[in-house]
Length: 183
Image 1 (cartoon, rainbow, N blue to C red):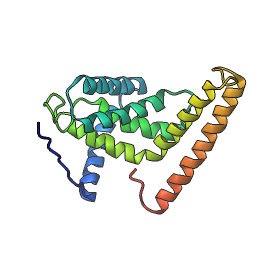
Image 2: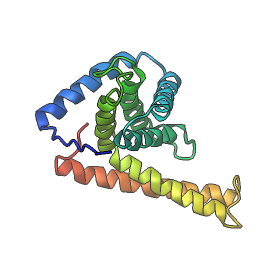
Image 3: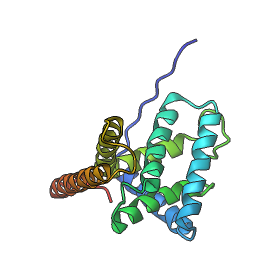
Image 4: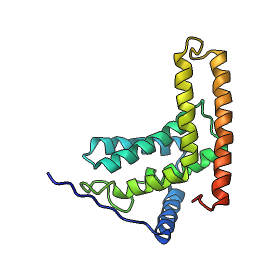
């Protein structure tokens, strides 16, 4: 079977329009509470995984899952303004009405994949810090003295979380100076 590769470039104007659309839909979805938004996003990811979607959509679904994990992870404990940004971004995916109806075979989740990519880029520093935190936690719990619930582990995770928060702030400050933050 022959494969078809499709590539396109979104110009600044296109990205601005998608951002505007995301904010408009997100504002409507913001009427939902955090639990409803997270549940709706989890349902969307389940529908993506249950569908026969292209690999690029599955790869983006994994990014969406990471954002949901980040929201649910009590150890990560996002600051309120960061949590608000993440929930605001997820709110877009809580609304069933988007550019391309999800039921259209092969293309239904294309618009969602594009939006997920934009969100993941905007929250890249947060996602990178969270992934580093998760790796540290996993390594710490494997060690003999890193039993879950131990004071030593709790202290180590708090220190790692603070370290990652500082790195995120530093990266975002550099990105703002270079005009690279989208939100």
